[in-house]
Length: 120
Image (cartoon, rainbow, N blue to C red):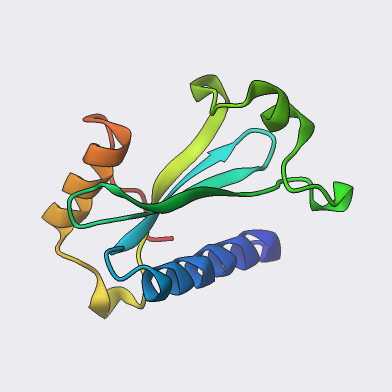
């Protein structure tokens, strides 16, 4: 696996771990990655409900702006630009919630067509 993907996965896992510590109702973190490289994320509860507010990691850090121009212009998440979506779980594999609960939360957040991808 290339280094950038490993760094990205570790960064998302760190954010998730912090989020569940800051928000006791959060069991994980839902994220949507767009074709511009920006990632929008929010904590999720056992019921698949949002916990905390939606936040963004810009895909264009070199511009030193909190959001890229494309996302700024669109104001909302354009489904046609989504390249990846999923739920990040804190901890290691031994601490994962039951698979049925993970699928339930993913489908509540993203819709009935959600399938659990490989562990992030």
